[in-house]
Every structure is written in C-alpha cells, then in structure tokens.
Amino acid sequence: MTPSAQEPTPLDEKRVIELFDEAARTYGEAYVGDAPAAEFFRRRKEVVLAILARLAGGRLLDVGCGPGLMAELCLKQGFNYTGVDISPGMIAECQRRHGDRDGASFSVAKIQSLPFPDASFDALLCMGALEYLTAGAETQAIAEMARVLRSDGLLIISFLNAVSFYWIFDRWYGALRGALAGPPRWLWARLWPSYSVRARGSAVPFRKFRESACRRLLERSGLGAVETVFFDMGLMPSPLDRRLPRVVRRVSSRLERFATGSLRQQAKGFVLAARKQSTVTQPLDQLRADKLAQVGWRRLGLYSEDMMTDVVSPSTDLQRNHWNDWNAATREQYVDEISLRQADIISQWLDLLGRKDLDIIEIGCGAGWFSQRLTQYGKVTATDLADEVLKRAKIRAPSVEFVAGDFMNLPFLKNCFDVVVTLEVLAHVADQQAFIHKITSLLRPGGYLMLATQNHFVLKYFNRVPPTRPGQLRRWVGRRELREMVETTGFQVLQIFSITPRANRGIMHLVNSRKVNRPIRALFGDRVERLKERLGLGWTLMLLARK
Image (tube, rainbow, N blue to C red):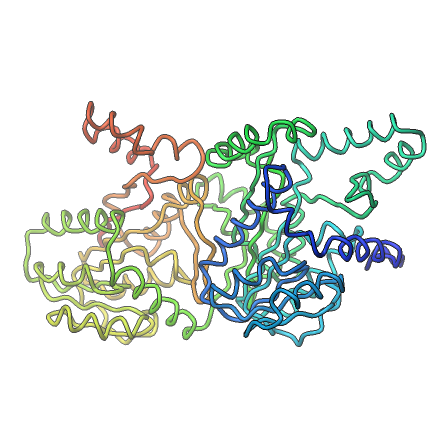
C-alpha cells in the first residue's frame, strides 16, 4: 500500500502547511472585493449558513477552519464551536481573533486523525479542505468525520465541481500558459494535471470531485446525503471572469436561480448536506443488487428515487421533540396557503356526504387548527405525537378529543370511525403500508379516507427542500405509488389529483412566479392554475377513498 493511497505524503503536507501559515493573516481578504475567488467564497458561505440556520444549535466542529471566519457566525446561531486546522499559523490567528470567546476552542489537527471521541458533535463543517488532500485520502478523512459525528448529526461539506466547464477550461488554460512559459512547467502540467493550479505560487494538491462519486463516498461511511446545493455558476472562463467580475456576478446569480439538470452542474462548486444514519434497513450492496428489480417498479410508476435510500427511523423521543418544536414555530403561529387549500378540499368532500353526525379521526392534527373546523360534521378525535402542542390545542378547541402518542401504537377500537382525515403525515411515517393498514382497520365498512400528502415528482424536480432535521422522517410518494398503496389495503380510490402548484427552482419556478401568473389570472381566472393541477404539477396529492 502506497502512502498516497491513505494520507498525504510528508512533502505534500508540508506544502499545504507552509501555504496556509503564510496566508493566515490575510486569508480573510479572499472574501472581499469583486474578484471571482471572492464571489465563490461568499456564495459558499451563504449556502452553508442557510443550511446551518435550520439546526437548533449544539456542538459544532469546523474541520479546516482556517483563521476562524465561521466562528463568530456559528456562535451567533447558538453553536458551541470547535475549530481544527492542519496549519499552526491558522490556529494562532483563530486564537488571536476568538480565543477569549466563550463556547469557542481551537486546535491543530489533521483531518484523517481527529483528536475527539466517537459521536462528539451534533454538526460538522468541512469547507474547502478535501481539495488539498492527495487522491485516496478523502475516504479516510470522511470516515473520520463520520466517526466523531453523533447519530442523526449533520455533515456539511463543500467540493469543487469536476464537471464544471470553468474548471475544465482552467486546467487547459493553465497547461497552455505553462507550455508558453517553458518546457519544465509544460512537462509538470502534463504529468501531474491535478497539481497544475498554482496557489500563491506554490504547487499544492487542488482537486475537483463529481457529485455522484461524493454521494457514494459518503454512503460508504454511513452518511446519507439529504441535499446538494450547487453554487457560483462559472460559465465565463478565466481570465475573462477577472476582467468582467460584475457581469459574471449578475449572470451567475440569475443562472443559479433558474438552472436545473445538467446546467445546474456547471457551477464551480457544490455543498453536500449528509446525515449520519443510526440504523440501516437494508445493506447498500443489496440495494444495488435490487436495481434490476426496481426497473419493473419504475415502469409501473411505483418507483421513486427515495426507494434507493436507506430509511432511517429516529427514536420516538426524537420525533416527538421535532414535532413539538415545529408546530410551536409554525402551525401555532400561522397556517400557510398550501394547508388551507388542503382543508378546503376536505371540507368540500365532507359537505357532499350531507351528514352532521360523523365519527371523524384526524391523524397528525398538529396544533389542532383543522380539528376545530371538523366539529361541524360530527364528533372529532384528533391525535398527534407532539404532546406539548396538544396540551395547548385542548384549551383552544375543548370540543375535540385530543389523544397524544404514536398513532401506530394507540389502542383505538376497530371499525369505530366514519372518516379518517390526515394532512401531510404519510411522508413522515416509517412504514407507510402499515400506516394505511391501520387506517383501514379503524374505518367502518363504507367509511372514507381523506388524505393529503406531498407530491414526490414536484418536490424532487422543481423545489429546493431543506434537509431533514433530527427526529424528522421524510419519504415522498408519487400518484401511482399512492394509489397502489391504498388499493392493496381494500380501499376503492374515488379521486386522486394534485393541488397548489408551487416551485422554487427550474423552469416551473418561472411558470409559477407571481409576475407571470398575475396577468394570466387577470385574463383567464383560475383556469390555468387548475390545468397545472390536472397535469400533476401541484405541491400536494389529494386522495379520497372508500373502504
């Protein structure tokens, strides 16, 4: 086994240390100004901070922290910050800037051998560090980061994008400059292309990565990728980007907003957010072995990409804490347009039944905002895992019988309800088929299931969705998969359709924008909106089924 297969050679490591020791005092200047590098660093920082903002504090490790540029920002977000770097000069600069701050600590350490016990941190940052490792060393580095991350902890890691036109052109432009400068530099660039980028005049490892390869690398260390954000669309190659920095910035910003598919992958870099998996329901090798079988599922329309990821089920306590916090911050404060539209559809279905004596159960009632509305149709029982939220819901809606607990374990009598209502719960259930089976057992013959759930197709391809938080399960389903799931448990599907078109990326972001839809609505009313819903482009799938 060669040393380069596992860790940097002493010569390479020495170059990296010398480079960053020299740059420690002035490194922060790289984030300032109109230079392409400054825009790249700023965009990367914005992406990372946006992901961190979704976390609820805890212990955070910043691997390759440099002079501690993220320390102050992380401390403000409620984290206890620990920074490590291979460069003693960088750590000395961290101590100079932040050494007197409570909740901040710094030390010299290599990414391949972190001096911390297992499961020490709730979150881990690694920004711009792996590109300075020699080939093969990133495997050991990611395994070491996974080791110090607790179960369900989040790793946020950035990479340079190997398939970006900007970097491909930069490589050949650098080789051409070397050839023109003299045979020795030309020979170096040809023999060691990954070392052809010069940083402050020193040759150091400066590598790029493919997103798909990075996801596989994370999987091997027990980290499930939950989100990829591409940033800084560098379609204007060097040296033009340095000549026209403001034009490049404007074009890059607009492309990031609308780019999707292969165009999205032309960004200079990407950030991967990955969660450490506590349990694995099926070995990864077996998942790959089943790929041929899944081709058949795809043809039937029952396959989704989520089927290729391991379903990790957090503990009940973690889930309860998450939904208590989420409901307190959202549904107890406001109800969004998507949820209101779902409630309107359910109310229309109930109106058609023409009864006021129904026995209704709402599963996953949250803050109980819809439960009170359902009482006009009969007696309402409402259940949710968020026990603290339900205590407050009982005060607001005393006519509703609230039952706190895991629905799958609650001892309801069989055949005791006329209607089951559940809004956006299915995607957060570990065993979805068992969930539908239990609903079937609760309904009387001829009873109705009225269900709303997120539309897999729309959320995956046309929306940027925040990564899951500790205690949150997520597995969206498509229309055909939902129909099959319900029909196999003895239901007759009466209606299934999508509602509320929403998108925040790709072409559908433009199609659904207010600027485009305001004049269309003035001319055609809601007919275009309803057409998009009939085409399956709504955020929500609505299902009405009878037992």
